[in-house]
Length: 246
Image 1 (cartoon, rainbow, N blue to C red):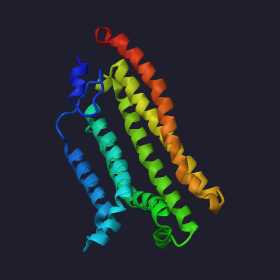
Image 2: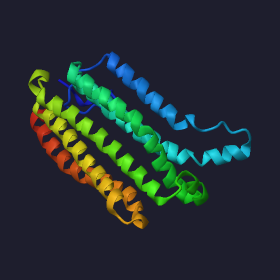
Image 3: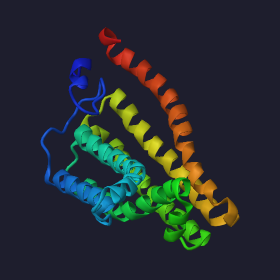
Image 4: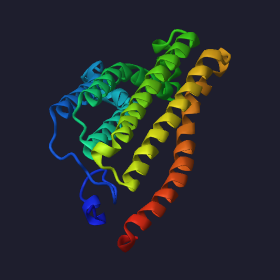
């Protein structure tokens, strides 16, 4: 039985969810390499500073780099947790992982430009204008970013949907099924935020294009509401399945 103490010893483990994957597969090794390469792409275009003044200028880019890094690591974490939970090594899970890695590579530069444009608009409008010649280009960037974001969330939803459909083969418990459905719902909800951002980027007046970026704040609201509701239900199931640890 999967105890609370065992859950605390493993990154991303939850009490009541048995991990079926332990050894790192070749697919996971390739995934780690791709994520590492994507992080390198975030900084590869930056020149090495030759003096302290240039270093201070480069230091300003730390905030957008940190934001991009956190986004990529959140995607890596979801993928890592999926393989630890289910250890699916068949054709369908591999194809979905390959699709995810392709999207991550595509997603890296739009991610970088979106966060860089947001940060430079705060610290230096002159540098921001050097990246986008017009607000129409910014509109296009928001559209491209939204498409990449939606696609990543849909792939994760498909991965967890496949895990749910394989519940008999994986011998998922009631609690594990709930957790699987929780992530699938969350990915679909997150993708809907990307759809809202895309539609805003396409149809709002150009002067209000910033609303497309602001709309991603809905992620926090949706995550909080959905997490609160789903977490309450999970605790009810956990207390019923593991009454001695409730």
